[in-house]
Length: 279
Image 1 (cartoon, helix red, strand yellow):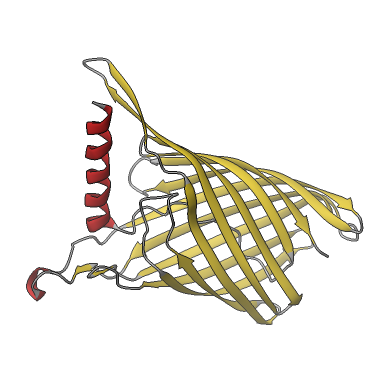
Image 2 (cartoon, helix red, strand yellow; image 1 turned 60 degrees about the vertical axis):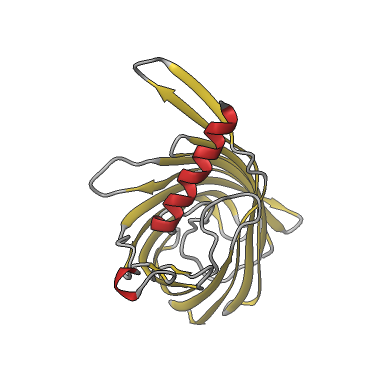
């Protein structure tokens, strides 16, 4: 019975992928708009998405030799993933181990910021290994962004995102366009020691502007009718401490990892991380 449920689940997942290959963002980091900086980050998170409970560890880093340029990477490793099925009328409860363990999505990118208020982020998403069964396409993105220092302790950010995908197995995902806004607020902040409280809020809205195509079909039937849109939100609360003339932050975050403006959210993520800043 369990084997049948797993096979049925896998079949449903791949069916969804063929139609909505980009609806699931998997483990994409929703980070605030920020200038180039140098840091290393280690975190852990628990995720609920479409009745699937997962646990990941996250490693990220960025290196900025100057205030105008940086390179970064963001990697996640999925430790466990379970689906919890319920049938209300018959009162049947079943937990299925999806056996998804391994490297999740990986991101590489670079930021260039020729002006103190404007920059461009170029990024590349690599498909996951055994840590996920969705988003198995290479994605290339460009994101112009702007920063505005509203006050000494509050920075506003905004970015426009454009993503295109590489064809794989005769399937061409449609391009996507997005908008991201963020607020970073520092409380009881020591600017010299980079210590105190820091709160980040991020709102991301993205929509598919082009239908995906199944290139195995005849041209009139290739379009997959998968135009879609949705939003994500994230809140971080961090406490930073001076350490060896650097700064170490410990943070807790909550993320609504998928939602719709005219519907109910369908995914949640809760996590914590430690972030070491090289000042």
